Image (tube, rainbow, N blue to C red; front, side, top):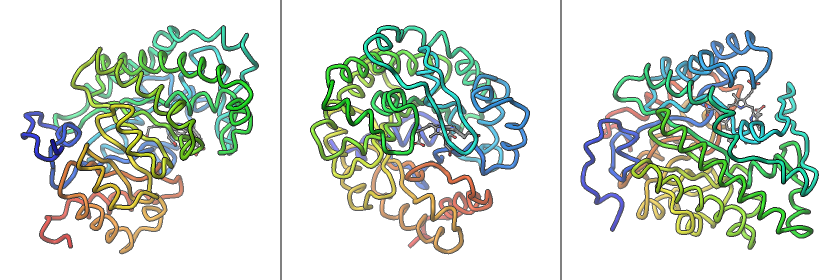
Length: 356
Ligand code: CP3
């Protein structure tokens, strides 16, 4: 059955309607990294905490940061302010954010370090996140949905093995050939941890959850994509569906190239977030199977002006035939003027007759 032929859902929120398979016009909108450094009110609050992890671990502060973009732009969803690296942190790996360098982790040694990882610590170690979700939920009106999230096992493991981001991940790549069984073991530990975390986020108030496989592109096109991206995410999706049926799970295998079909079929996600490299024609094809989310280029948002409004109209028009959630193809760039986000939302919400 085509996703867009499902009956109108009774849910009042545009986001949950669209994620449930209903065509909503104009489409609901939220932006990856909608809370963060491009907002002066975020930078002001962030200065009051010793570091970024302390912000995430302070529920009052994290709830306030989550709500900042909602107040400014009346977006259709709030995404809880946190980070994907709270998972390795709760499992006992040291994580810090060095100014200008991104995240730095103590790289995993070998089997001994893997033995010491305890997936059960991930929920108890992240009670601050659960409190943040509850605080935000209490503040949202009945139109705005709350999204929880987690990193996908492969992306988390890549940070844990290499100790830093940047896209090279030389140690992770080496492990794929030198000790693939160790990688399998790590990924199944992380799949259990992430399943437990997402279920707890739902219990704390999340109405949808997104799994960020930001570095899935390292695997795309090879056999590893099925084994190390799709398979662990499939484990998570079935655990979440079994435990909390009806809550949509959005998958984001960034830079998956031509791997989206395999990802959707193999993981069982309810909706797919695509990056800005994905053509609108591919999104239209995917939309016949499930709701699609995306995919404005964050650089177009950074630039603003007529280029921005034209692109917003083009994406909306191309995907108007089925369930669509408007988003970027990756996170908001920190130099983005906040007014450009207001322009994006206004352009998207113009009456459809004005949109060519
Ligand atoms: O979307 C939102 O508004 C919610 C908040 C959110 C953050 N990180 C806050 C954050 C989300 C959803 C994330 C996810 C995340 N974190 C991902 C997946 C998405 C993606 O970008 O691919 C990844 C890979 C991370 C790991 C991470 N955290 C990196 C690479 C960095 C450094 C980024 C940079 O630009 O310096 C972070 C830090 C981070 N996470 C910041 C924020 C607001 C900046 C920290 C600061 O204020 O100093």
